[in-house]
Image (cartoon, rainbow, N blue to C red; front, top):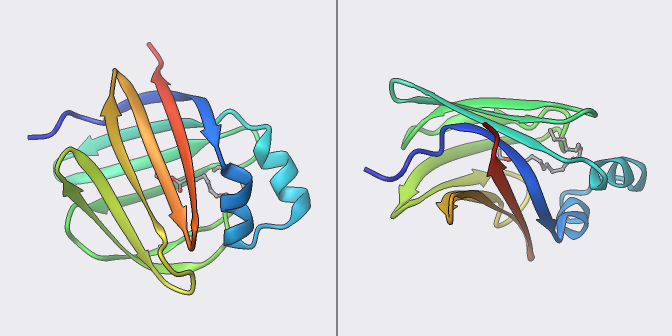
Length: 135
Ligand code: VL7
């Protein structure tokens, strides 16, 4: 059983976020606002259902899934696209494939050195975010 990702986490670093947003087709004005945000991640698990909230002063994004069960995702307030998404464990990493208009889209979450790591990828761009636990 992999280590739990559950909890409240605050962003401490965000590498290549702008290029990742460009790959998603996010406009300049929104990118400039988004780049300044310190994102908070709240991950909860109820039974076999996860709820992941990404919270900021600008926009919030919440979605929910069961591991290894494909679902329709609408990335409302992000790039506003529909994806067929599938989340599964890959060793100690929780990984998601987001099938849709954008090639090679998805993310991976894992714990390393008591930090929550997130790698977001789209086309040829990888954004790397690290979060520390909020007590
Ligand atoms: C979500 C989204 C940027 C548009 C608003 C600024 C960001 C945040 O999806 C994400 O994480 C996964 C795994 O935890 C859960 O889906 C990351 C942040 C990056 C791309 C798009 C900029 C608009 C607001 C809610």
